[in-house]
Length: 256
Ligand SMILES: O=C(O)[C@H](CS(=O)(=O)O)OP(=O)(O)O
Image: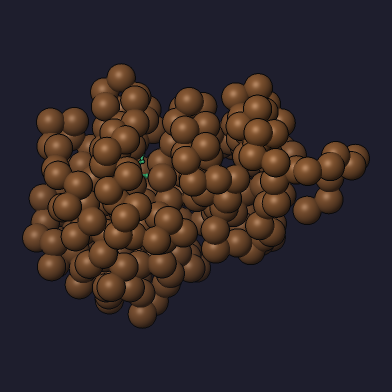
């Protein structure tokens, strides 16, 4: 990545294509012109784009948008809710055909809105990973469904074993379920326990709120994988990763 001028002692950032330090952006309906503008300023800092939930079903010019992202060399995938919409209707084969039809190279497997047996979910991961790179998501979108840290670890581990490239820790667009309390505060004990068993580079933490991004960057470092980043927040996030915004400025200076 080329930077505009020289500053000494900037935290070292991994470079694209990265396996660690990923910024996953959620596009929930950008127009083609907005997507072009987004790529012009933030494409360089974006590792992967999710077309949020099932927005791809109603997005006009879907093929053109996918082409734009492909030309920018940024992988794209449909949100997990779309996968779930197919599964709940018993249309797994149709989902596979849909991925082929649109030339998708990545897919999300989640169960945030549906109840499926976890072995069955792992079979979907395993079958889909013969076709695409699979990212799976752990955690419910239902704030009342809270499960213990050991369970998160078990589910994440089983999904990685089944073939997931990365596992996403659920938070939704609002950042108020899953790994967060409804106030948006991180369930710290949960995250700490997960990190005792699952390698941090295998997890993408959904962190739509600035305070959540800062928390993970301070805990894990500049090159933590973060997801559900809004397009307009990619450049601000990059500065937070580098200790160039007040929120992490002293954290990184004090590490020297
Ligand atoms: O689970 C998510 O992070 C997203 C967005 S939201 O929950 O609908 O706000 O859903 P996904 O289906 O994974 O894109």
